[in-house]
Image 1 (tube, helix red, strand yellow):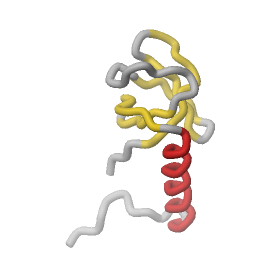
Image 2: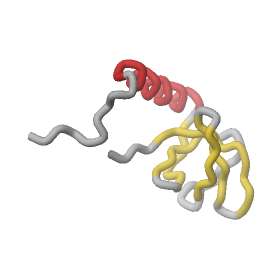
Image 3: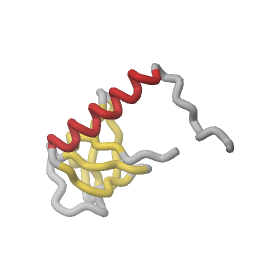
Image 4: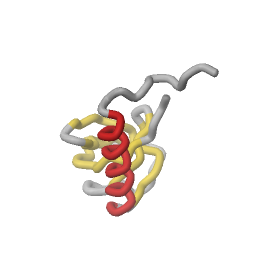
Length: 84
């Protein structure tokens, strides 16, 4: 299963590159697909690429839903859907 997750841009180290942070984890990603990214923006990240921007409220709502889902399942989410 692949997810695109919101993360906050904390640094812009070079052309089309950004350091994003999510839950204390930092990762360098490409921002080549998104215009006008600045430090403090929230971007949606998928496999190392920022694929869109979103506002802080929308990012907070989405991250809250992820946290609620994780708490509900207490780490026992299946990695793949059950076979029919």
